[in-house]
Length: 623
Image (tube, rainbow, N blue to C red):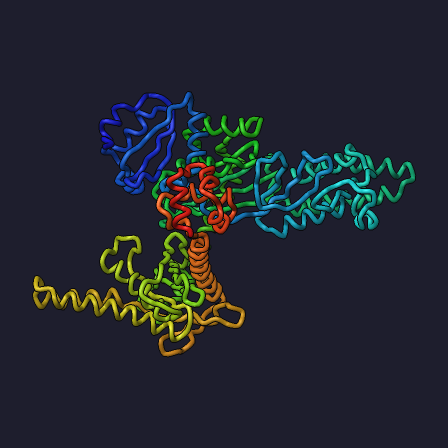
């Protein structure tokens, strides 16, 4: 048995990474330390800890640690372990937004310029991200219009150029009409453009244009003039400040009472090419420096788009270790700067202001949705928790259900639950719905701190009046069960019974509404138990449609999983001594169950792990 106090005494006074586990051996936190002994002991001493840390420590069952040579090694190991295990108490980038980047495969002889949403360490150059996908597309369209680079996705040599060559949109490197060196000049100019090095490009174009004019090559001079003017226009559209930096990221953070927002600006050559924002509702009690440090380590891990400078409000405790790590990754010096005055400070303040606005807008949107729901549903309180359910089956086979949760106006996928239908046989969706909701409500009545949490304020039935009635019947089932238990409890006097009855009635006072779809499978309206359709705004329609789609997808995915699992079953599963590995080996050799049946005992024994006795048993049981 793991004795925490005894293990704390064994901690070395060396740098390393510590890993906290809960009673189920799940990793809940990963951290690094210059001294493992000092850092880990702090968690278990009586001092002023935040509520978040107290919650984490209360869940720690045991810990382990890895000793390394220095803090830089500890930082890299910490980042990789967090990425792999995603511990619940670490700073995690959960936001699933993916902004577009412009990618140039510089390793290719004749690179193309494309839009991508995946950042990969593949040696390519990435520019962005672009918060507005239209801006990325506009830039790529501009590049392909003004530079005669190849348009094709898959480059290969050929004997005839394609249409783009004939309409003067490509110089046909596939046919050899342009050398690698000449083509590379265009690519270098495009890279300079995307990096914001406009002055150098314009100067070179001006020289080329004047040279072409002197040589009476007016067509080339006009082409260069148009390209120069187009670059000047694009440059002006991008400019956002006079900050004198070429390649920086600026990080701003804002905390509200319930959430944290980090905003990151991407500035290249005095021009902002994009921005991103991330929300961390579970980190509001964490120290600001710890949040930013954790964010930087998560964000730049495996990110090929590392800037030369990162500007932020406060100086981090592990600033030097992060700088060394990022410098090694980039191959040149990376600095973390905390400006105190001037234009650089104003830019950090601008990022902070935007994080504040972004977070306030998010909370405003949530607040407006919740207030509209309260009004539309005619409830006395804001419906903070709403659940919906969906049934999935094919002709009554592999019947399953899914539950999804709308918490404070946000769909919480981590609160989704899946069910196998246990008491209904044959295709009867309303009866299945009644069974599942009855089971779900029982869970919270018996243990409100269990996996299902507290009861919902409302249930949205996926369908019309039939599903509404099935849901209300489920509520009635649980209410009746609990009333009978209370009335039969001889340890309670009359007053206590009445109090408990009232408490159960209040807890099960759950409003039920149907989600009615139109011909395009989108939510048209909400319906009450009297079949009255409730008018809702477009924003609420979109949210409920997404809610409906989410539970439907969850149910379908679970149904397919069970169906696929059933389809992989075979007669081999019923033979004693044949497990998953031996089954795979048999099928690998004989390709099908039918051929296994036809095989001789000697042939079966040629399979790894199949003894003579087992081969005889297979032959006997598969006659």
